[in-house]
Every structure is written in C-alpha cells, then in structure tokens.
Length: 441
Ligand code: SF4
Image (tube, rainbow, N blue to C red):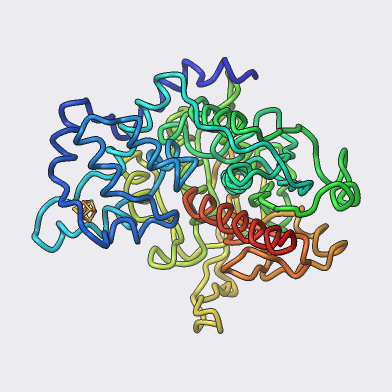
C-alpha cells in the first residue's frame, strides 16, 4: 500500500471523523473567548508545553501560520496531537474558565484549525543547521517518540537516521490509531515535515537487517522508540487459532487494506485504549456483536473515560472480572476473577476464582494486552534494565542503564498518549544535546 492511496475511500465512509473542524468564523469567535492567561494552566498541563495562549492569540489576529509555528516549536506532531489528545484531561481540563462555570476554550479544535491551515499550504519549516559536529544519532522505530527526538536533534544541527521496519513510517500514528481519530495520510504529512528538516529514514529492522553492533559503531547515541511492538501473547491454549488476530495487526490491516475480515461475534480481550479502538473498528467493519472482556473492573480499566463512553455508543458491550483461560473452537473459555489487595505499585491484581469457568461463543478473538518483544534483545545484549517488560529510564532525561542508549514513548511508559511520546522524545533529544555540547566545550 502506497502513502498516496491512503486513507482508503471505504474508511472515509465507515469511519467519519468524531469531531468536525471549526470553520474560520467559529475559530475566530472561540479564539476571542480566551483570556490569554499569564502562567496559563493549559500550557502547564500539556506534556509538550505548547504556548497555548500565544497560539490562540495568533489565530485571533489572523496569523494562522504564526500560530502553527508556535505549536510546532513545542510539538512537531501538532497535527496528530490536535486530533488524538485527551484534551479534556489535559489542556482543556485545566482551562481557568471552568472556575467561572463557563465552557473551557476548545483548545484541541483551535490547534487543529491552525495545523490544518499550515498543512493546506505547502508546509515547510526552516531546516536545521547543517550537521557541523560529527555526532550522529540513530532512532529505532518510526513512531511519535522517535519523530520528536529526531526533529529536535536536527533543529540543534545533529545528523539523525530513523530506522523502521515497516513500509511506511509514523508508527502507531500511521498504523495503530483508529481511523476516525487520525487518518494515516495526516500521520504521513507529519513524517514528511520531519524529513524536510533533514532527518534520514531507512526501512530496516534493527536486530535483523541492521545489527545493534553496527549502530553502536556508527552512531554516538541511540534512541529507542519502538513502541510496544506486537501485542503480548495471552499464553493460553488455542491462541494460535486462525480466528485470533492481535489488536495492533487488526487495526493496521483495516487502515491499509481494502478487505479486512471481521467476525459476526467478536471478543476483544483487554481494557486499554487499543482494546477500545479495535472494538469500535470491529463494529464499524460489520460485526453484529462486539464484547470486551477485562479481568479487573470498570474502575481499574486503563482506557480513557471518553473512549469507553464512545465505545458504548457504538454498541460495544463490556464484561468485567473475567480472564481468558483457553481459546476453543468458536468460543473463549473464561474464568471469573476477583480483585486482590493492591501491590507495592498500588495496582490490584486479578485472581482467578476456582470453578468459575464459562465459555463465551464467538467467531473472532482480538487480544489487546500490550507489551513488546524487542526490548528483551536490548536487555540481554546491552544490559538495559527492564521494569515489568518496559525499558527503565532516568525519567528527566530518558537515559537507560547503558550510557549510549536513550528511550521513550510506549516502550517506556507502557502505552500512553501520542503527546506523552512526543514529550519523551524531545526530552531525550535535549539530554543528548546537553551531553554533546559539554563534550565539545
Ligand atoms: Fe485561554 Fe483557558 Fe488557557 Fe486561559 S487557561 S489561556 S482562558 S485556554
């Protein structure tokens, strides 16, 4: 599938956008409601610290390109973040207008207005200075964390190569975010913007076509932004049956292929945002019934509340306190669970209840239970510490236990938002820049 062919016409119909954009007049009215707060809490709530009052003020004065540049200065993925950010718990959730019982400023839609205007005209940014120092950085993975890291490094004049094994870069933004939130074509426009800064992209699998040893030899630093990779296996009998399709592959397939098979009765296993995306997609692709099973309760479910509410509107049904024990022919066998006392991390474990097994009839099973594989190679060969299967880093810098390796995004935080990955990538890039500058001084 080529980039030009995306999004698929069928998906434009089946997955209409959740929130239509503001027109020019509505954007002006909304921008003029903003109080342009000093020490704006909306900007503090943004993980990438976009100067929200500044970009809104530029919209109010008709300077849409200037507004977009303010956004891109802090967040190179300002377009995708304007569509997928959970604004009600971030910037809009912090807007001071809440205190006056007024509707918060629609920051997400205003950001989108500025970014759409930027990309509608041939988008360009001033390229970073030519690499003057011999320092080179490799980014493994082509998703939001790596793109943000690469863009920041280029803006400081360092040479960056992004390695990604998929045909199209962009990671989850291209392949994994539900179509009604973010079209792959928009993700690819952001990739092109990063490329225009002078970042090199190579389609190659690190650990296979390109060895870690060759990266170590040819690059000064290596940033790991590999996401969660393929979903973790459930580790139960029957999961190799053909009717079992992992959630990330299912979502990537319908976004880039003309025909995606979906069952009549679909069971999705997991309680995160990816589980919800897969469940909604299954409904839109024609499944008569979609059932999400989660081993804890509604209260512990990691998906955002608005995603959960949206899925219920789509007709997705939820089942709590149940974990799969076997995939059968046209059914999943579950065991009921109960919640144990919280562990040291404050998380309550789900314990199977003996003798509580039951079978649930279905003809397709979509596991969506996170965690990746490539990290194991890094842990084994580079001594990079893992914490619950995720890469352990020094949070303020993103530095791993190996001084040459940094990491960020889902492979560190376990699967948060695009904006968190962007913040991680940027933070790691700045930490590398500091070290490079100190070593050159
Ligand atoms: Fe505008 Fe609300 Fe941010 Fe204040 S908190 S600058 S009113 S968006």
